[in-house]
Image (cartoon, rainbow, N blue to C red; front, side):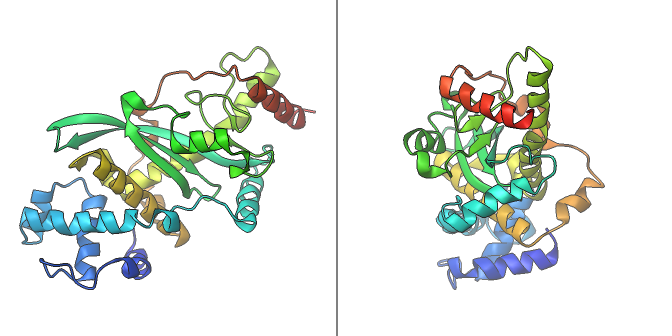
Length: 303
């Protein structure tokens, strides 16, 4: 991120940081700087400690304090659109996108990424899945992380919430995800085996939405290189790190930071599209209400 964005985000988050971290006596500016250094690079605690002339233990204490404090503000920094005004803005932001305005009630876009993380408590590397939902501004409005072999959309918190409470989203609205997500009346996905030009056109119309969510994931990784090489004590701490990254990403979007755009000129690598991070399993698309909803959307698109 740019220096100006760095300073503005510190000002925004200062209220959540202690005036002094005991017993290290680290002031808020040092806590923020160390944490941003850790998240923006893939350096280990030992390397950061040597760079800043502090012990590994102090470095860990200070940075982990930041993760705890910021992740505790999840609902303030990663906001699901719940008020009428925010819901209306969310739908309109998608409608204003010329590539997505065919989907008149689109409310969010899902994406997943498989990550490798070294867990100190287990002394081994494990694979986890990060699931996000982003809005039309590419801000994260929901994130979830779980061990890869335990992942499914239906058991994620948002998956369970949507199944139980139809008022979680505006009436008639829906999310869009790729083939790894199940078809639901509130979740549209590409047709697994399109049988005609109309179905193929529907799948093509979904691609800009899926790309937008990929770009959100890719932007996070380009700003916060720690996602390339996560290390944590346990899964609980991994969740705090990811919550913090998503919160900082949202603040960068709010402040219109152009770091990622400038970085793209030097690096064309797209982290979100890397093959070994994709979830290849095809999810079910036999839900009858989901089929009915999809047919209605297609009728509106191709009448």
